[in-house]
Image (cartoon, rainbow, N blue to C red; front, side):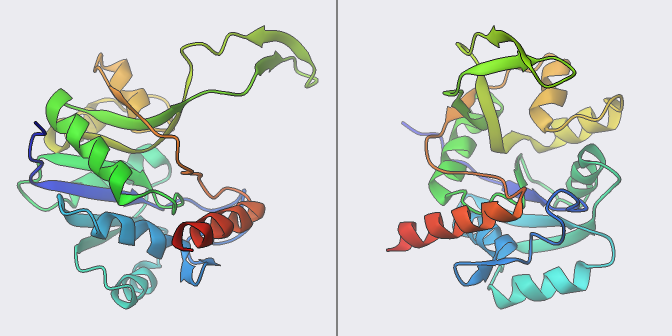
Length: 230
């Protein structure tokens, strides 16, 4: 029997510069909607999610508030400016959570293909085990390269998983953890939690959940979204 999930929130992190993309990817339109709209609507559709905090680049709060209003995102409770890195952006988002939130799902704003079903599974596992993270087993052959980009050895991929989001944690505990674990520049919250000795169950996901990084990713995401609604 599934444990009811209550008092859960989402922090959708989009405070980056978009340098690799070459511009603003969050307001790029795919399948008729901005990337960020697809992302927010997925969390809006999850009954267990009571509030959404959106982390955005500095000076663009009003712009994203308008996007959210146009998309009917009624669960949006705060829009905050991102920090100098992901670690700081997530920390600022957590500080803006509504009081009483027990679980928080951290999600990359540039992952518009996330489904309400995957979000719900991650929340369910976290409610039972304390934390969770969406991930998928690595299927490609992996090679390590030298400084010149030439292969030097094959990496055993057994037991290797590619990380995704959402990543779900107890809200108060994650706030404390990010306040105290200030060294380095972790690329996700699982990295920080592992360094503190947390045990993080993975929620296996085989559906597309790509992160928009390059302009060509927009075409892939659009094709997948249109196929999903066909």
